[in-house]
Length: 157
Image (cartoon, rainbow, N blue to C red; front, side):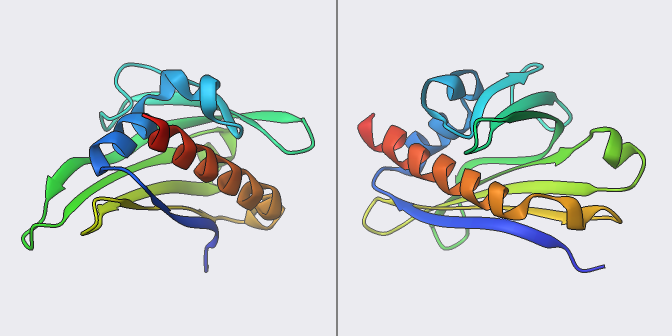
C-alpha cells in the first residue's frame, strides 16, 4: 500500500547545531510553535524508545493530541565527505496504530550547507486501512506553519 505524506523543505540561516537545539527542545515548543503547541516528553526527546505526547492546533482553532515514540536520532555529525547532518524520527503509537489501522512516522533531516545555513526537511508518511481519513491538507498547512516558525526561532538565536 503506497503511503500518503505531508512534506516541507526550507533553508534556515543558521548553523545545524542551532537548528537542532531548537528542534529537539520540545519543552519550549509552546513558546514558538504554532502547530505543535505543546509536547510532553518522557525523558530526553532525542533518545530512541522514549515516549512523547504532541498537542497540535489546526488552523481552524481545533486541537488534537498524538502519542509518539522516538524511533531514531542521529546528533549532528560530519559524514564521510565532511558534510554536517542530523536526523530525528518518531512514530505514532496511538489506538489506530495498535489496531493496525494507521501507521505514521515523521522524519526530520538537517544538512549544513557550504554557506553555513541549514537545509531542513520534514516528512510524515501514513499507511494503513484508514490513511485516507488523515486530514492531509490540514497537516500540510500545520507543517508549513511549524517550519516557518522553526526558521524564525532558529534565526533569532
